[in-house]
Amino acid sequence: MKTYDFRYREPGCTTHPVVKLVNLLKNTDENIIEIYVFKEDIPLPVLRLFANTNGFSIKEVEESDEWIRAVLEKRS
Image (tube, rainbow, N blue to C red; front, side, top):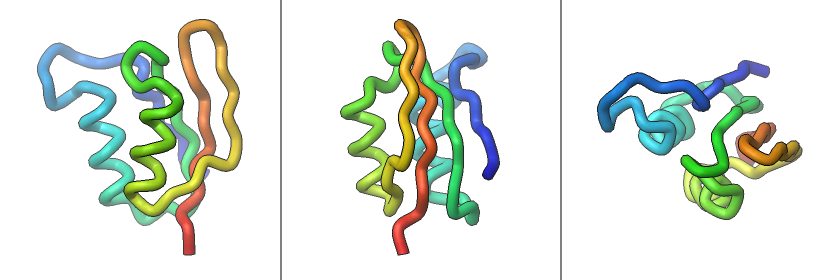
């Protein structure tokens, strides 16, 4: 399982967590990935939508006041 942390970014729109997450989900060869995002960047309902749209399901979620940790698995 590979881990991706989208909580830190550089200036510019191409480094926004939404762009990085969608690109990852479309292009990864990994079957299981772990991601970290800030809730203000990608709320859980939006994360679920992106995962489902790109052939993943969320297997595990951990939330703090500020961030979300999620384990996503590619559907067969």
